[in-house]
Image 1 (cartoon, rainbow, N blue to C red):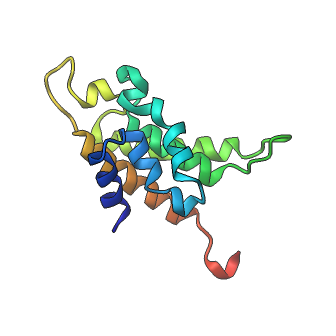
Image 2: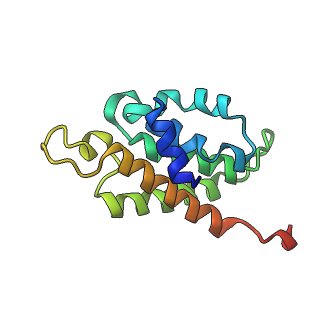
Image 3: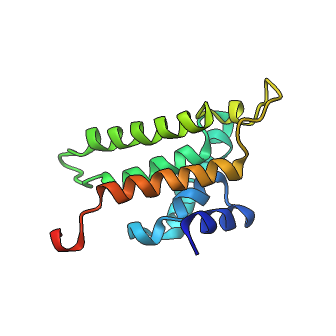
Length: 141
């Protein structure tokens, strides 16, 4: 099953958009899916307020888990993580005209820019492409 298929299946099971995106990458990122589910719960419905799209928030979780050096004493990876998220956010915005849930759903305009399933699909594809671009070949590890 592809990551897109996995994320869409999660969404059909009741995961919010952020959970669906992030949890599709749990195994690859070496993170407990239940914990990732819990951490991203408040990010659905545009962070609970129709703000930033949950699928975009799910991409942020993927970026942080993949890019952070995890050094609590001297965090040094923030710049790279922020850069990764900026790149992914811009790719999502270019494709969908917005990263705001309320705008994507057409709440104020009546014009839906992208369905939740479409946002999930786009976020997973963007995150997959970014991960592929930053992963080192096995022989270089």
